[in-house]
Length: 141
Length: 141
DNA sequence: AACGAATTGTTGGTAGTACGAACTAGATTA
DNA sequence: TAATCTAGTTCGTACTACCAACAATTCGTT
Image 1 (cartoon, chains in turn green, yellow, red, orange):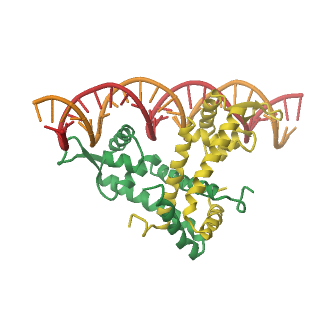
Image 2 (cartoon, chains in turn red, cyan, yellow, orange):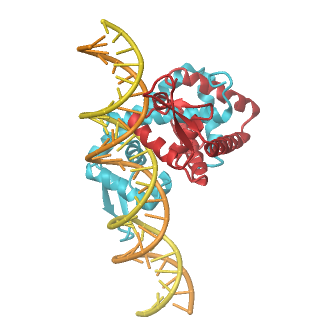
Image 3 (cartoon, protein in one colour):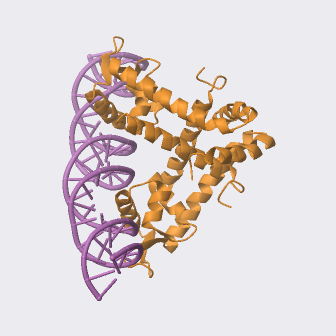
């Protein structure tokens, strides 16, 4: 009842989430980062982002984000750069070292999760992202 | 590339995980619990569990678990009961109040995630748990 | 039975996470 | 200009999670 057969839909999602979280934590630890720090770095791969937007992307209060950025900045992985358009605001950007780490981590996580997919039929493998996309249309972004 | 269309397999899993985490956090907050506390309570629905086994189920160090159980015990939701077979060990069990909360939370989370599934075709809805079960055979339990 | 090893759970210390309320400085609108 | 809103920080609190060290108990050998 607990294993492969009688897994309900909700339970399946929860289990899958745990699997992802575990890989994420694992890779983060390899790079001596916390999962939250890794997530922040990955969020910046596309380019600098302001604090307010980051807090929305990460679903964090701004005050929580301040501390997270502080700690990652202290390690020299990101920098706060002034926003020329608004003197209150700042943009968070990856340093060269941070870029390296962000790419490595992102790549490793992607590699691992893709590896997990290998047991599936080609059909299932193609279908799952589509299904997820449908789910996300409701609650997520 | 970021949105619905070109979602890679790994990215899909990560997004789905976020969705689950969010629902979990949301429901926990409604009941004035942390996600970790909710998870602990749900883990005990099936009956009392010892600390060592719990730490494996939750992937936590025993020392981390001690604190988690302490806090939930302080709220009167669980109790440590002696294990007659081993005088070192204890079993963690839900109090009546904890049972109520555990069932409520578990039900609410299940209800929400099942609701999310409603956009899917019957076929996809049936298939996903099977696919997840296949994925879990590798890394998970 | 007794000794050493392994196991169960706790304590204490450290770092990180996350929130809310209060705040400063700069932008926006009336 | 005054009133208001927004961007980000600070502060205080509670929780999470790890590691190393520990006491009590059980297990395995001899």
